[in-house]
Image 1 (spheres, rainbow, N blue to C red):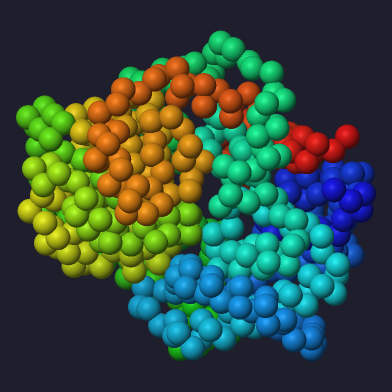
Image 2: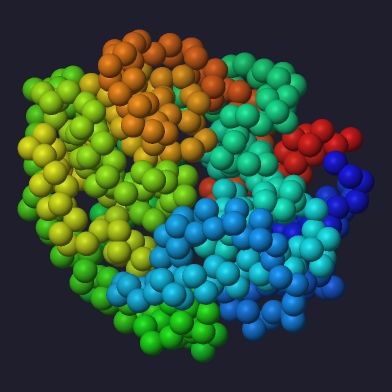
Length: 503
């Protein structure tokens, strides 16, 4: 890499500011940053002259901050970017409310405005490196990432795995398996054998689900276990009331374009009330259609297909085009043995009322009826059914980026994975990128091949041995890993300089 690089940080946490400060001595000069409540004060004191973009306004494409850039985007750049419009427009729906109102025209307008703006911004500020918080999966981080690739701007991001294992540094999540820097990094790390924390983690996945649940779903346990009463009562914190006037979000309001939207606290409460009502109906409909089965009677007579919480990055954009559940199920029905059932189970977090309102658009009330009507082979299961029992008794597992694939491999069960997620090259997990991959998995009877537990453990150990025990997200993530912002920034820095082999 060049000695001096103007850098834009598509990052929003306080530890990213500390991380950026640490990189200055290696020649990476911050020229731009996203800001929100978690990092804005530190940005103000650490980089007072650096251009910052309010995160929600950035996501809404509010171009009020736009300079008068007049240069036209080159035709070849537009042509290349146009191949990403379909994906961009789907991701943009994350910012719509429970009543879909985002028009195709508005999406096209935002897409073109953002290309024009960011092409000029990157060119004018001579940006040579764009650092992303993780795989870009929000509308404009996705757009900026794809634009950087087209403009030959160096990109970088740490991929989130499981907290115990740490992060994987890479420049391109779509081409991670061909990442030479990453390959060299893995080879350069001396193995750390018999680490107690690592071995305990593998042991937990090999045994009881409740122990594994505490690791993988640590911040959702009370909701999943329904320790919190589900009711129409909305908890309004004192801080929320105090700051109601300053409340903001990236959601589109009903009577305005996305870029002009200003969801106030009243809109927020109305949406939450609506969601409470909707989620109760959705959950009731699922319970009416689902069944409780004795799984031992169906041993190796079914495929386990758990649904993902949507929208999430594992399905969109990492799973595209398989983010469409009905389409993916149809492919499974078409290409798997007709005498094998397909057990579908909803992700329990989809019935958590405090999740953002956009997940309602991925689960209409009729959604479960549509699944059941696809084939008599499909059976909706009680959402409380033990996932490890479902894995162990299945013929194989299929999922669009769900952690269930990783859990399956550890437990010795083959899995089809329809997403470019961190474990997509793990032994025992077959990455599905086209229909032929499904046919090969079935016709070559790959699902019958025994998994070498040692190979699965070696895969995880290789990530663990990198030593990048980093958090992604807000202070709650740091607290869970018991590390400070400074420690997190140091791990991020080490991952960065070792990935690029900077001395």
